[in-house]
Length: 115
Image (cartoon, rainbow, N blue to C red):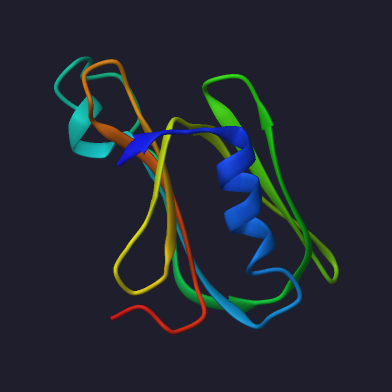
């Protein structure tokens, strides 16, 4: 993965606009944070193969970044994003890594369902 370049990510987002797509969105502090503080509550969110269509996709902020996808009745947001790539299958992967390189959030967009 490479560091986010806003214009490049925006251009990649635009290629998926107004098409049926599949979303993978995952956040976690889980195993990465559980050892730091016994009193800390472990939280996460996960959706895989959520089928949506967005009319507007936008990247904002300054490292870390936020991506918003305008869907029919609302928005999908991912915040804390630092890195991105387009993989061999044409999926857009945007992720957020902490200062130690551990993943904290991942947003993946594809025209095909994820395995």
